[in-house]
Length: 180
Ligand code: SF4
Image (tube, rainbow, N blue to C red; front, side):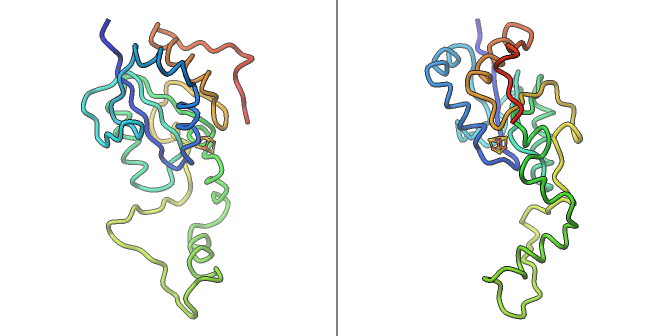
């Protein structure tokens, strides 16, 4: 049986969901017989080499580069999974959603003790990603097929999800699902 292709990415996340992926320990050895990683921080492959069967998205969307990457994943993945609370609800970065963006930037660049005295300049450059008005959960911007809850979902759950999807349906025992 040919290996299924899997891609992963971290958008506005902390990489904790990817750490959890690695935390599956010996399960990873079983999994590696079934899957092959394409684009992923785990392989350091930064662009898609092939269309893939399963994409896992960690983190929500906080800037236009995140949005571009998310759309690229939707385009290249047969099945797309929001992995963890940040991808599903925006997570901690979404705490800024109730505050106007201009206020956030003023506080971050002008209001901190390390700011240059009397400066009114908020750093920007055309090569830097543009920050969006708020942090978006992935499913508000593209179609997401499955959601793996938890902060982060455990390695066991990620392994089970991938293995069951490879069999054709995603089934996780209820007692393993967390909503933190
Ligand atoms: Fe990190 Fe939790 Fe967000 Fe995953 S869900 S990226 S572990 S904060």
